[in-house]
Length: 444
Image: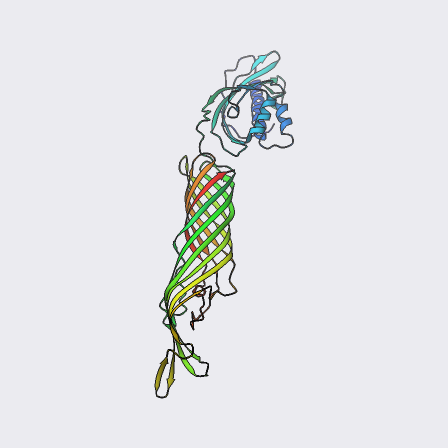
């Protein structure tokens, strides 16, 4: 018999009469303890579903034709059940059973005919998980079993010990009407996220030696996603999940500000001059759409019965499916020539001009980073509506590592009214965003 440290034993030692010696009493009680531990092993193995589970179960209960039912959560109206019915009901209804056994009381053995009979009592707390992966309310049972052994002793234990009777004498709190909020192994979450404010930061000051005055950026972002969650850890207070899914992200960036650039060059006639560009960038609006696959690990900490605090962190990979821009600006292009008699500034020869310019889909380089990657984290609250449906509110931060457009050092934003290079090339930073998200979670 396998021995396990399962019980916190409170073995009641009765007064010893002259009918059995102390050694015989100890051997009978040892045999009874072995049978109780075997019972625990057999019930535990029901969740394993190995090849020998049914044979072991039926062999152990071969001397019992009827037993009281401790699976009343699944068939409340049936008080007694046969071992065959018990096995079938367990395998059809129960995914696993988390049990705790305690308060073992082994009574004094009595002589019935030429055999000992020992009555044992113990208690069990159990949380059943059904086939839908729902954890049911905790139940508390008190068992009374009669164990029969031969009087012969081998290795400090009576031989041929077997269980001949098992009853459930008391059931405490079999409350099936108010199940506690529990999680399941698998969940499917669908959610939407809205950008709260931009966190891209300032553009790199690549024009600071050329009277760069600063261009700011704002961002509006919308995200829709579906996530599959697999539970990987579970205890009383903390649950952990491995999550992956697919998100559709739509973002609109707006760049605006003042820009000035002076640089020396040569005109079409071969004359050297200083070209001066002054731009009031009303807006460059860039619209992007990408598909993102996040892989994260989340931890749920139970605050009280229906509410959990959620922490999540991981990585993401995204693929840019489309990008467009719309540019509005007031621009002035002039040339300053140095002659022997002085300096002259032209504003109407060659391609010099000034005025309002509006262009679409301009300045986007052919080589952009369609595949981007980064880090993702969130903090939120989860409210369990019932055992199968939950609502999650969280704040999510996405940190992009590589940019949409590669950084260009000393880039000239626009050197004529027919030419423009997207200001996003002056950042060299990944897209970072802060989202408020709401998700509906369905246990499957």
